[in-house]
Amino acid sequence: MVDTETLGRLFGQIGVIFFIMAIGAFISVSFSTKALDTAVAALANRLRSKGWLLITAVMVLFSLLGSTMGFSVETLGFYALFIPLMTALGYDRMVTSGMIILGALVGVMGATVNPFSIGVAAGEARLSIGDGLGLRLLLWALLTAMAIAWVLRYAGKVRRDPAASLVAGEDLGDGEAAQEPAVEHRLTGTQKWVLVITGLAFALMIFSVIPWSSIFGAHTGPADDTLTHTTAVRPYFFELNWWFPQLSMLFILACIPVAAVARIREKELVRLIGAGAADMLGPAMVVLLAGGVSVIMTNTQTLDTILHAMESLVTGTSAGLFTVITIGINIPLALLIPSSSGHATLAMPLLAPLADFAGVSRSVTVTAWIMAHGLTLMWAPTSVVLVGGLAIAKVSYDKWLRFVWPLLMGLLVVATGIVAIAAAA
Image (cartoon, rainbow, N blue to C red; front, side, top):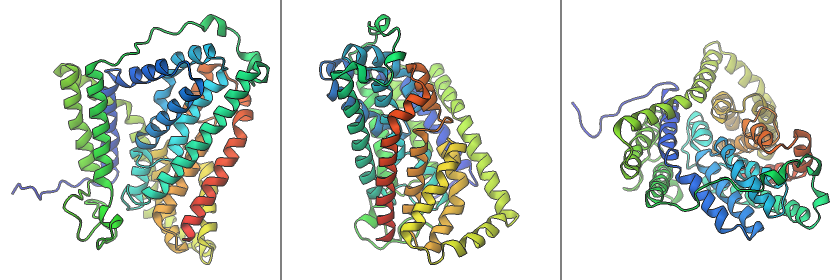
């Protein structure tokens, strides 16, 4: 019998894989309209006479996109726009690199509802994406403000005294690049509608996974069903409790109105969906393999052995110290596994039960994990966003470390302190 209560069940990692590929399909269709590229170019053109405001606006935008949809690798296409523009405003290539790289990656570090990191980690920890959202919003705001202040401080110093530039000897050829590339600065009506649809799709995703009953004090229960992802015993009528199957279909269906307003023909739409999903096969395979490692560790009782050994270490440990240990453990893991999805799939099956042993909320543990992962991407030579961006901007890796290490220490101290306080509360 077919009815509205019939549920198709997705076992193992297939739900995560479908979700990642669905997101890729939607991004492919949406980006084919160049709506986001043009919106950023229009913003840059409007604020071109106010350098500090341009830096702030771009970093807030990139951080917000990184926090909500994992926007980071896509920033590699914006260097051609911003390098000549920032040079004309009196800044160096380090300012451009910091604005783009830190803008996106501080958003990844302060992820709120990023489906590729928080979504996967929450699924592995048997939580909702909305669990711990308030703490992550606070951290996102603080960390983003710190990154912006750091870039603005350096940018102001370079503009006042060009000799203070860390890359003064490497800025050869900037004069040849003084002309901005031909980038359209005006959004068409179609592109405006695409941005609206994209915003609505992600807004619905956020709304659908937030445990509203928990926020407003209704009677709630644990998220103990990884298939239906039940988070409340008596949810409000507007509480959707969607999870990977529903969210996957949301983004597949969202491709249709984008195609309709952009007049994308049926064959081209199918091609874009296929290409976008194919682009995500790499991350999907990482999730699959990491899940396989977890299964092998479970079936061979290796995970049980590790948990038993580590239980004695964390038993009696303060909640604050446990979060510090969690961040410390995951920094080298993120260096080896720069994929947030793969890192979450591999680490959370171990961290979630350890958090129970230590008396720490699993949602706080997820937040501690993403803090470590995002922070590592800002300096790790395995980070594609970092290494690729520095190569395009012609900024050496050692100069980047010299520029960013005080900020990284500050971000680490603030993030660790706040998460430790949240764990102990």
